Length: 551
Image (tube, rainbow, N blue to C red; front, side, top):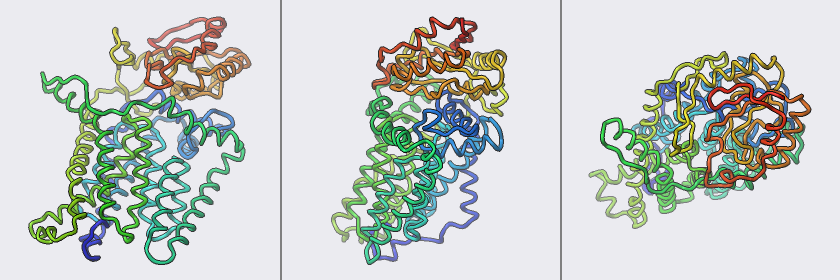
């Protein structure tokens, strides 16, 4: 696919993947994720997705009945599981395992188009370990699977590719937008007649399918609120409140005094440098694409544009939860480039390389960066997966946990805090049991944080674990939203209207972290704090969970 050799060398060396081969790969990738799927619970991310699913299962509509800025695909998928299996922390984990395995399989199939089995397996190893941990009910894995499916069918069916783009938008709008632009450009560049027609067919299929999928939600919610939360908020506000500085060179401590300390140090270095290496890898892949590009290789255009889009996704918040999309996107083209370099640098081919055009020789210069990054990603994913596998977690003793596990004690304080604030699983379980004993089924509660003027994380998982609905439409502790005066007045009004229901404040210091963005700065709005002081009294405390009841 990227070779400048005769056409016969542009096809895959060897037979296409067989069903047994694909089945074994899927099973292996599923096993990697499955071995750690029960470990760890995220009070914020897991809680907000499952609480959104609970609302939808109860007949509510996002953007109208509750504040929500994600596309509707993931919460509606989880709501369907909620309807069939009931409240559970297990069902989304099973779905995530299957989707992770599907992504690894699709990367392998894409890599096999221009790389032999060994290189394609190396490419598949990247998503297999990179997506296994950290895990969560995030929408991007499904979006990635649909995007990869689109890349696999663009040369056969513009209509099917467009439908997959429409589906992708239901999970991540920006993923669909970047890939849709890339595919349309690829069709226009494609040699021969029919490129413009294919681009038009693809665009029409994508727009029609996307509109049909969004309509059942956007129509009842209204175009204005839907646009504001799906388009305006992510573009204008999200990066201001959620962006983090891009990590460059590791500046943490180095401790090689023991085997365990050395292992932790190496793991920290590996993970810290992943974003930078991915950006270098993207530049290297794009350089090779550019040096070897011919119109016959038009399929590279969608990958290049999508890669740039995933780089933007990473740069917005370069943490462990945002590296996987770019790593997955670069896996298959990295395998193509490495396989091509292997063939050209083989002893039998070196005479041909000496006679090759200069730009072909230049395209081999970035190869070490690509090889280093692929190896680094696999090593980092393996060490993170191994740590998670070895972590000593215990089952969460609550009905809806269904086998999910968590550490008995964990640090929930800000980095460098002295003394360190420790949270315990027992505190969480006791809080949930207290809520269930004090609040009748069907009656609402409100879950707040340490401060109302500065919020960086919340604990909406308490709604899910207790089985009690929210007293307001704000489940997500979104900085800039729940820290604003109009929203705090609305929350106060809702609490007054509902007779001052029970309130739980998660007072862990990580809920008010001084992040280097607008979320980490106080808005000065403490209306909700003052309201709690006037109208509520503390009735119980379980570690960082403070229970308030009306005076």
